[in-house]
Length: 100
Image (tube, rainbow, N blue to C red; front, side, top):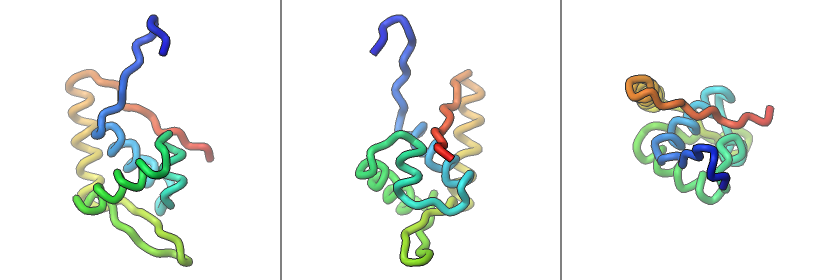
């Protein structure tokens, strides 16, 4: 890591917000696309997404035999609160990496 540049670690809350934003952009999103777009290993993304599903931020659907994830109302509420808090403290909101 370069010492001259300020490298900020992502918090779990940043990761939740990034996953929600990626899934909103794609509508329905499979695990691998969500993982790639947020620069997370697939196994870690799977754990985070399962946690978010348990908490009602995301919902899992099956489409053509594939597991797809979508954002719930509660997930949208989380993202709005995240943006408001980030704005209050002057924190930059990390952009997801969208390869498409």
